[in-house]
Image (cartoon, rainbow, N blue to C red; front, side):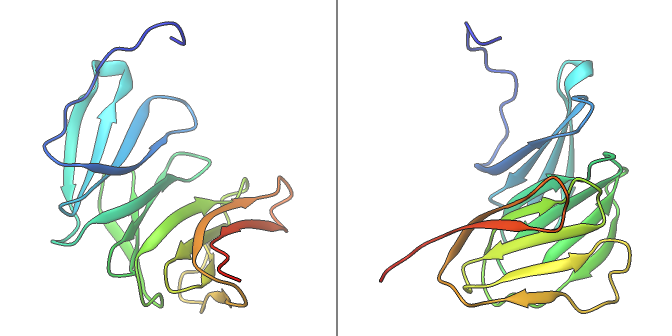
Length: 160
């Protein structure tokens, strides 16, 4: 609750990012050693670990229906997983670490923000389509969709 603090998970590596499923039943974590953690909130935070590689998982997100998870990687890859933890798609294009990843409210788009100064907007219903690349800015830290899913807000590093 908001009045007390209680440790509920103790992973074996640093967690770079967290997201809670829309129904509040699962918590996912991005592990610094290449692991994706899924904790079952309703089952005393029972832990399931999926090895996604040897490089850090840097960002995670649940789809609005909770049936997909997205993991951004240190090497710029974006991995899409189903609810059982199987990687269904590997999305490439970024040249550097993924800082943030976010599904829009309808779940048909994913935005990935990277240290390569780009945002990639992926079609989450057809991953074979090339993403829209937005790159007229600096280092991108964070992204958020407006509720209509047609506008995107980005937090960037400005060195000007």
